[in-house]
Image (cartoon, rainbow, N blue to C red; front, side, top):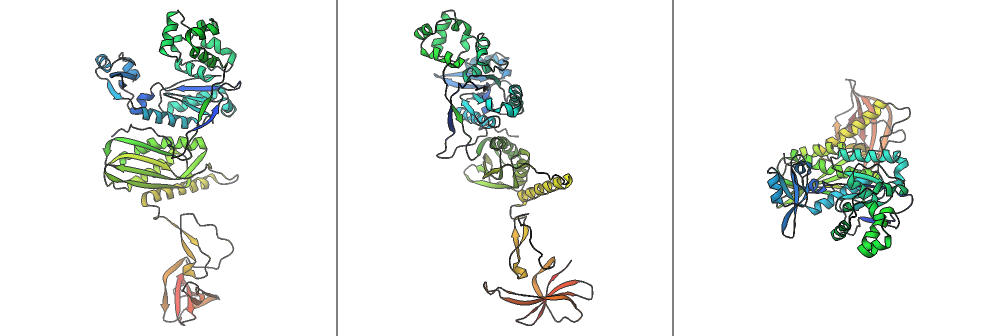
Length: 502
């Protein structure tokens, strides 16, 4: 089966919309930052399902093809970042080399920022491969630092991402510790010096020239830097170094721009091969649904309609609309509906790209249960709604409908089609009507042998729409015991049967 790789799910901005929000000071006394680094993001962006064997991503730097990122399997063969592709292939002949896709990495990081919105309202994207989450306001909701950190790690594990994370009172400290991995959470600013003191100076995100000069002085660890006078460091190595050290310990404010989830969702994925079978489209659509559900969960919202667009080579795209009657934000629900919809589609041409767009959002309402209700009945109602959704997805939106009463005395005009279960409950005590109404009233030669029952009901109306009628309706029983609904036309004088009672 074809493997889809090109673009990760992303809530795309629409013209005029911004993906950035407020500025966070980054050094509040009560702030706590969770940094997540994705060291394999460059590989995941171009080979979402291909992380098993030796694989590396290359980029061209100064006319040289250099390894940017290598998988663990490739690293075990001696492949490291910065070496030439030729040298890497010599060390690992079975190495697969793919070209770096920077836009796909940006899209992937944005999709992860969108996913992280379920843990905090303040997420900051740190290109090219990290996220910062301000989690101080979420601790009580998730049960403390360790519980929240565990939830994040478990969720990322289910998404099959390679990552490392750390928690610290300042953004720079969290980022630095996350690169090292395996560091316990640091919650007190006073503990930063002790925890960071053993970090090698070469691991600091400084200019190569500055790191080289520091190495020549014999400074190896951060604690060695802190022993030197602050002013002397600034004079000898520049303000960049001292400013970074101040941000690391929270001595100065560090504004951070928050990621803002777009108000509408759209995601695109390119297929590496032309797909002619709708059954092979479902895995790619399922890939897009992950991003949709993250988007909805971060907003505590649900959606009732999706549009799946299938793009063909040099052909107009095919647009499929999928609806859920009660709305949903669960991937399994939408996956079933998309699967049913695809079963009824005949492709006019091979598919090369998919686009998934969500309709209007509405508040998510979890299934409600009556205090003294029957669980079996409520579950049956939910299953009935899901069945209607699947039938509509397979047969079309117009193939399933309900009936709704209309405020009109004329029987043939007193009802109309409506969406399933879209009819409001009837109020009052309507007159007794037959279950089966004939499409056209059938004229009777006479009423001999029929026994009229009950009172007569006169119905007059329709003069306003050209279908004027004046009738007297009766209940009658024929010799076979059937209960009929008759009327006598007051204008023409004939007798007609209009319906049958059950």
